[in-house]
Length: 270
Ligand code: KIV
Image (cartoon, rainbow, N blue to C red; front, side):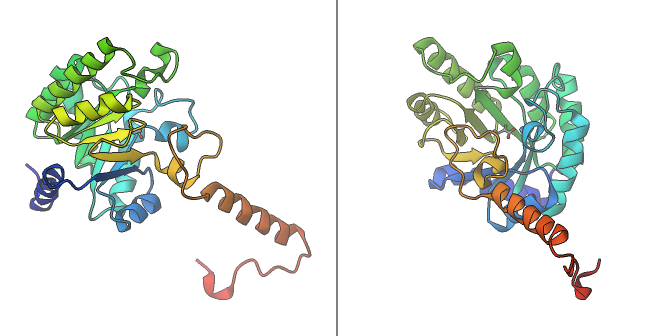
């Protein structure tokens, strides 16, 4: 049973696709980022397991744990009053329907409004169990980052007609199961457009062309906060890394420079 406030946010969200308004989704892993995104009127703030790379320093998402996700979901929840908060079920935490529901409940108790897991038809028992437990669910199909080691890299999906047909079947099945939205990651644009037309819930694209019902980016890619890697489809609209480096170097210069620096204004003590 959702709170009246969450129920009304979910109802407003469901009205977006029929009204033609695009869904805007970004990731956050900490309080200040979540609060800034909420204040910027973002529709869904996702505590994505991409934080494994951009926050925790892992090579991929595979080593992120449920405890990591719970910890960061709590921090994000504290910063958000308006948007919906989504949270990723990390790798190996939804092997069975029962485990999926238990892991999803842990994220909901940490403050998520919805959970997301990767996979289509092969994950239907888990997806149905989550939805039957009254937990709002976001699907994720196409390129699946949790399978990167198995697949030997991040590979674009939908290049062959067999792949396109399988993606369409996956999207239709996840939609029919009752997903509130489905992330389409790394899918050939024309295929993503066709899948978008075929489903009732909104598609949220990432590297899948302009014709999805909404778009998501990893916020560090958008703000330029992770300069060591950015996927080719993500255009940075900021230079947070440059600003941090500039401020740190300016501070170091002041401290090491002439030794006359007022490090803290008297009124700024904490
Ligand atoms: O973990 C994540 O940030 C995601 C998005 C890239 C869709 O799943």
